[in-house]
Image (cartoon, rainbow, N blue to C red; front, side):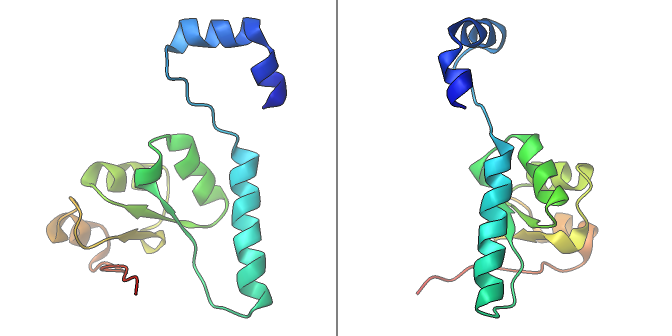
Length: 122
């Protein structure tokens, strides 16, 4: 990342080609974060399944990387659900939050019944 930020010519070309804002994703950091979570859960013997919140980032490369890392994806719309399936995620690796744009009919077409209806924070 530092090398990229210091390469003014490359940055200029990227801005000219793709416009601004320019979103740059460093996926090895994503991989490390997943591994860190796994290590903590395993150290404390906590059963777990990690999910990436699709709403947090629209970049499909992150969804594909989630699949490569064996984690699931939390979808909040039919489009996000469709994109996750198109990226090759199995239905068992998808969840939805109850109050989302993925209605029960659409969700039922994918996996029968949502794995997770809502997250509660107390």
